[in-house]
Amino acid sequence: MKLDLKNTGNKPTGKFSLGMFTLVICFLYMPLMILIVYSFNESRMMSWSGFSLRWYNSLFFESKNLWRSFGNSALIAVTSATISTIIGTLGAIGLYWYKFRFNKTIKVAAFVPMLIPEIIMGVSLLIFFAGIKLRLSLFTIFLAHTTFNIPFVLMVVMARLEEFDFSIVEAAYDLGAAELQTLTKVILPFAMPGIISGFLIAVTLSLEDFVITFFVSGPGSSTLPLHIFSMIRFGVSPVINALSVVMIAGTVVLAVLSRNVIKYMFQK
Image (cartoon, rainbow, N blue to C red; front, side, top):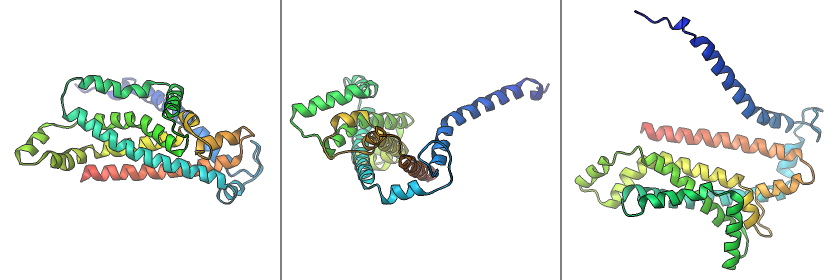
């Protein structure tokens, strides 16, 4: 007996799911589309007055302070993501590879910073830096971003390692591989997609962080979120729209490249 799927009511369910999916996509991407459109608006006001590249010209040729802040953000994002990725990856491998007392306790404690509100994290780091008499600067922002990025990298890499068959490590040992060789030629290649994902998450979190950065930044160490905040206090400038479009384009390119790299690694 064959089941007639055409008359089981799957079509209405499919239409409902498609409709809900469309609404969610519109809700998520409509603000971005509006931002992109108004980045080409001639007027400062939220009323269309004609197509213009005025704000892109202002962004690239008249906004030195904005690009300086962006450079600070990019520098901190890349360096803090790199260090947190190294520490988080080694921590995840250590917690997964070695079974010791308090292993589970350390795993739980490692994820606690992810649950702490950012304002609490920012205040505690400010008090810590003041206690050790460390002057607030780009270096303290780097330390703060590295601190809150490590748990995210640790979580992503450990999730990847949960799929790992530990018998492969035992086979490597049986074939005469040393511990370092097993780490570099077996575990790290397997964990690489998780490592790349953790690095990209860390870069994103660092670039968009405002609350913690606000507490640990000092004179002359403005990042892009802080600079934008100082700009919007005097009114929203369309230059921010143009910068947002450039950053969205860069994010899309980075996401596509990382996806292709991970896909290539799996095929390999």
